[in-house]
Image (cartoon, rainbow, N blue to C red; front, side, top):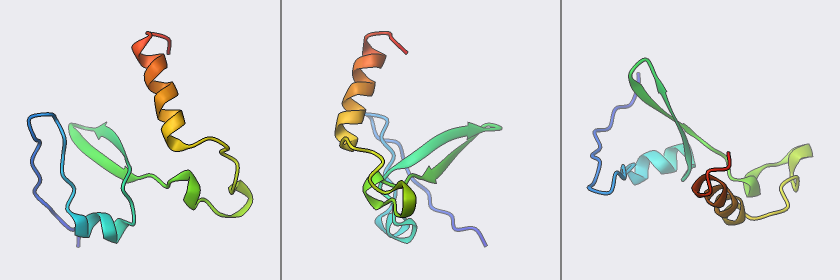
Length: 78
């Protein structure tokens, strides 16, 4: 059976995901998509948690990647 949680969007557009849900999914980052008028959220693994042959593939921090992405988006270069 699917688990349901009711959440609210604050005045800054943020959605609070309950701690027990985050712990159950072992995630603090999510990919958000819209499908048929529904918001879908899928846990995203942090690069530091990747194991096996892909471990160590990403040599920069997540923060550095996000900053670079912000610079590209704010500069209109996509």
